[in-house]
Image (cartoon, rainbow, N blue to C red; front, side, top):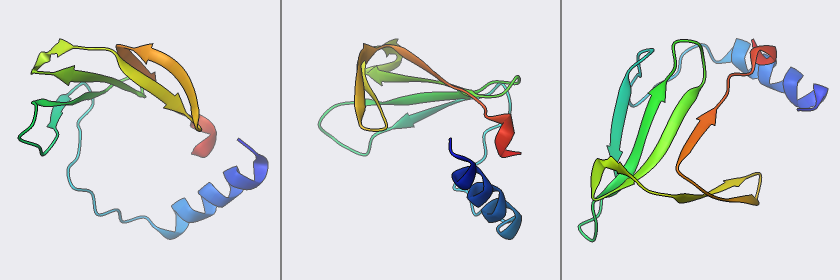
Length: 93
């Protein structure tokens, strides 16, 4: 992350302390998200780790059935994966 972007994020964070979230996820808790479609039951499971960061996986048919999904980051494909960890960036604080 560039120094400019980091400074910009820090300034935005100071300005906007109140965030209107749709829901809050407690540390160590998992949440099951389901796509709003009648075609197929599918969605994501997200867990916020107590140590920071998130575990995310795609499910199909049932939340306990983890299936591979394409992972893209910054427009680049990293292939099919089953579980993803999204890490915490302390330099943003």
